[in-house]
Length: 88
Image (cartoon, rainbow, N blue to C red; front, side, top):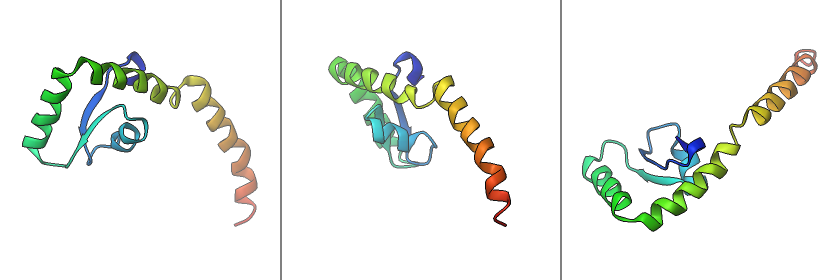
């Protein structure tokens, strides 16, 4: 969703919650709190300005998961792994 600028309304029990908070790319509510979730969704739907701000933040968040970045991190792991194994 973030890669196309779609904000998330999620709970703090979801894996994406930390990313949404860090980038201000949506709203995070308490797990299993249905009224809070409903209020967050309604607030988002009623505020075009908020959704626009979140959309820009989503595009920044998505850069964390770009193919180039993920590939670079994987290469670093593969290069580092042999060095780590020799220490054990």
